Amino acid sequence: MQDKHDNEHDGGGAGRRDFLKCMAWAGAGTLLMMKGGVLHARTLGATAGAEAKDATFSFAQVSDSHIGFHLAPNPDPASTLRAALAQVDALPVRPDFLLHTGDLTHLSRPDQFAAVAGIMQESRAGKGKVFYVPGEHDVIGDQGAEFFRRFGERQQPGGWYSFDHRGVHFVGLVNVLGLKAGGLGFLGAEQLAWLKKDLAPLSAETPVLVFAHMPMWSLYPAWGWGTDDSLEAMGYLRRFGSVSVLNGHIHQIQQKVEGNITFHTARSTAYPQPAPGQGPAPGPLKGVTPDRLRSYLGIRSVRHVQGRDALAVTEEAMA
Amino acid sequence: MSRRIVHAACALLALGGGMATAIAGPAGHAASPAANQIEIRNFMFTPKTLTVPVGAKVTWINRDEEPHTVVSANGQFAPSRALDSNDRYETRFSKPGTYTYYCTVHPFMTGTVVVK
Ligand SMILES: [Cu+2]
Figure 1 (tube, helix red, strand yellow):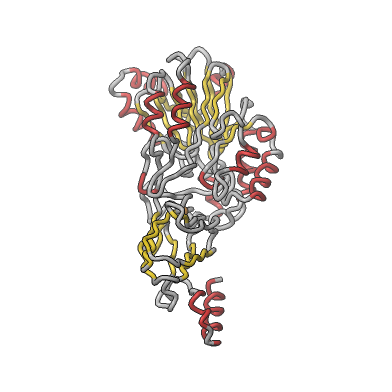
Figure 2 (figure 1 turned 60 degrees about the vertical axis):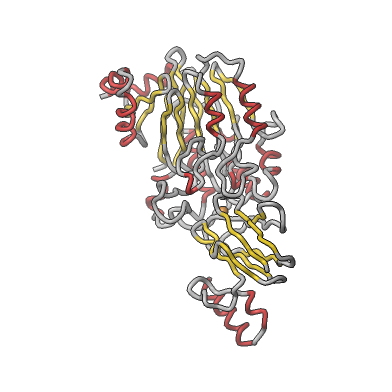
């Protein structure tokens, strides 16, 4: 099965259609291998363990913990954030660091940020290095002042940043500030100019990983699922052989491949939202029963395999 | 919860207080005299355009599980804080004009208050 997928993908033009077929069953227990911007899906099994040993490093992603939310289907998002961090701590290979792609809190209240900080300190992964980017729920009323004070990297005045880790260039972007009436997520001219400069010295072979809260492609604009000026950012990223973009915001896994750029949105640790356009609005799926809730939540781990030019993305549901 | 609000509103009406207009029943009681009220439901401001006389106080009520805000698109009136479920925001419009506002959490949500 896995060889068949590899061969099909190597065929070039047919790859996109096969990728879409693969996506139909990608989910918990499925490994997505990325090569030159093309994902290869295979089920987790004995081979996954062998690959884990080769991996130069791995990291994990959690998203949309919404501490302060108190309604159906999850009146206790603190306990599910704890469960997500326990999942990260239980990964077979210890991740070098953790990404939190925003909406730490529900209402940007200082006590909610304090609660997040406390919960993070309860886990090994949360006590280690965590890179945060804000969601729109983290910047209400104060332009993100409290978020950046507690969780910011303090590299650029606007809150965005980049770093290199074992050959991979990471970029954390802020697309939830300065939002215009009637608009979507927004990066802004200043951040785009910085991004262009930040990427300029890198060779095209450098794997690039971009993370931000709101989807960086036009996923479902009617519900605000997109970023107004993401095309300009993609213009700077297109020359690289392998670009992965990790987002949150929509509380479900969605993927898209555009040339060498692969987009992934993540599950929430708090509650699911409907598939694009399914229902009147993108609010919480409040009909999800307590026994089913954790099957919608989870974490993501990403492994960089040195010498294979590949990032392996694994989605893990909480239950 | 909503039952309690209805009772409270009824009690005030029984007292004959003019204050009663400021306390709205939940949807389904939309025919209440609280005309200068905008409901936030399913990520929409309803009515999307509200026309009020000069000096009117307008009330927004969030009926969603999601927080929303009410923010003037060009700073013409004071912004609300984050409105949690069933939170309300009130502001008085003392000058005629067209006031466009949006939710900064979900900026695709826009509405207009016309004051004349
Ligand atoms: Cu909103």
